[in-house]
Image 1: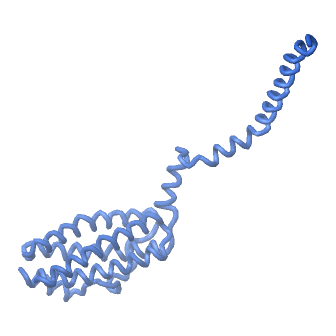
Image 2: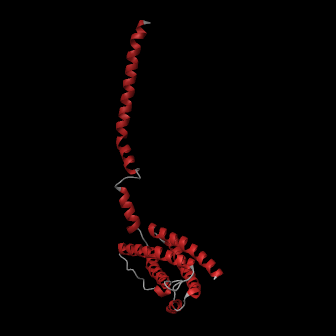
Image 3: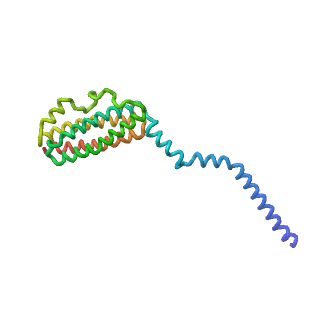
Length: 208
C-alpha cells in the first residue's frame, strides 16, 4: 500500500506533463493557420473597410450605371425647371408641397450622379436628352409657363406624372442591369419617392 501511495503522485505528474507537452506542440503546429484565419475572417478590419467602400462607390460600375446617371441628370434637371415655374403660378397647397419635395430631392441627386461620372472617367451627357421617356417637349414647357392658378396646378400634375413615370422606368432598368451598389440604391430611392408622388398627383387631379 505504501508503494502505491508513493508512486501515484509521480505517475500523475508525468501524465500531466505529457498532456501539457502534447497540447503545446499542437498549439505551436496550429499557430500559423490560426493567424491566417483571424486575418482573413475579420469583416471589420479597419484597413479593409475603406478600400471596400471606395471600390463600391467608384471602382465597380458597368454601362448600365453610366447610362442611368447620364440620362437621369437631364431628366432631374427638367423636373427642377418645371418646379421653378410653380413660383407665382401654382395655387394648390399640395402642388406647392410636391414642388418643394422635388427641389429638395433632385438637386442633391444630380450632384451625386455628376460625382460618380467624374470618378468613373465618363462624360456627364450621353447626348440623348430628348429621347428619354417622360421628357417634356419645348412646347410642353411653354404651355406650362403660360397658365396660372388651377390651370397651372392641373397641367403641372399631368406633366409631372408623365415625367415621374419616365424616371421610374429608367430607375427600374438600373435596378435590373446596374452593377454599382450606390447607383442601384439611388435607383431604388427614385422608384420609392416618385411612385409615391405619382399617386399623390393623381389624387390632386381627381379633386381639381
